Amino acid sequence: MSHPVPLNVLPVAQWGLGLERPLLIAGPCSAESEEQVMTTARAIKAAGKAQVFRAGLWKPRTRPGNFEGAGPQGLQWLRRMKEETGLLAITEVATAEHVGACLEAGIDMLWIGARTTPNPFSVQAIADALKGVDIPVLVKNPINPDLQLWIGALERLHRAGLRKLAAVHRGFSWFERTPYRNSPMWEFPIRLKAAHPEVELICDPSHIAGSVDRIGTVAQQALDLGFGGLMVEVHHDPEHARSDADQQMTPAAYAEMLNALIFRAAVPTEGMSDRLAELRDLIDQLDEEIAQKLGTRMDIAERIGDHKRAHNVAILQPERWDSILRRQLRLAQQLGLSADFVRDLMDAIHRESIRRQSSGIGEPASGSPASVDIEREG
Image 1 (cartoon, rainbow, N blue to C red):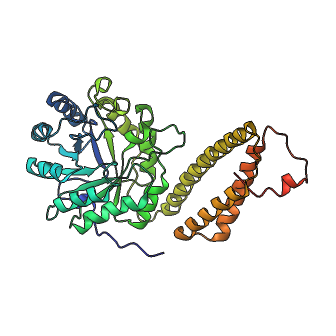
Image 2 (tube, rainbow, N blue to C red):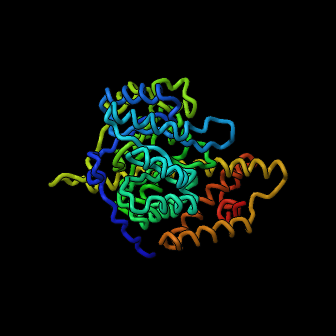
Image 3 (cartoon, rainbow, N blue to C red):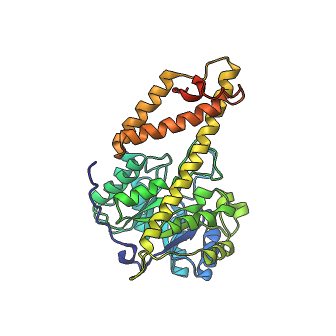
């Protein structure tokens, strides 16, 4: 596999905005009114826990008719917020026109959202609009788990001359049933960091959790994995928020959560042997993710078995298993995994899947062909 080309981005402390690690960003999902922006910003500033105030002005909604943001008028609210509180301002941009309006209004930082990142045309248009501009840009992961699109967006901005870049992990839309709004899939930001250790990772625990009671847990997981900051949705009156009400914390709850978090040093101090422990923690996190995904896979296999029995279809489907194995072997080659390892792993998964699919029709006798020579899954 080819080695990625370093992006040569600057650390947060060198962005020239007085920021430092951990980077703490807080504010409402969307700017709804000047009063809402100012009330929330004052409370966040009073808590002394954030460096940057976030608020979406243009909100891409799945269906029309929902609140789509205050638009350009909200830029004046953010300017007033900056002047009164001293907090920096960041908002989302999805078009070149958004970029131009934000630069004219003196917005300090920008982020590219999860619905824009997967569109190379949109990202390129934003990158072109930012050529020659020295401004930090945060890039959220795409909605679906595609690491190359995430990295590609960072590369497009880097080619436009931007050096103050960071990646924001906000989880992925996935078919699995999980306790989260968006599956964290920690392996993706870990792989991004492995490919580009110079890029700082920021976690958006609000979009991963989907509810305030899980935000702290997700935030701590991110910090334990070495993330360099948090972007949390905070609203002075979440119950009446016009978007994502369930995942927005009150300023008081936000301050309480931060006080309870354990912030990790960016690197082990001299004389410490924490590096091994750090890597083992990453392994433990990934092993937990693997176990959860395997459990979900087996639940689905069991439902497939129920469906086959209901329609009097044989459990064993050789063509289906051959297709699965070929696909996994192609993927293994792309990821640098040995074919023997992937084949052994998939065979073990397959045996357990067949066992789950076969439940309810009687366990085969010990030593019978069904117990020792199960070869195909459908």
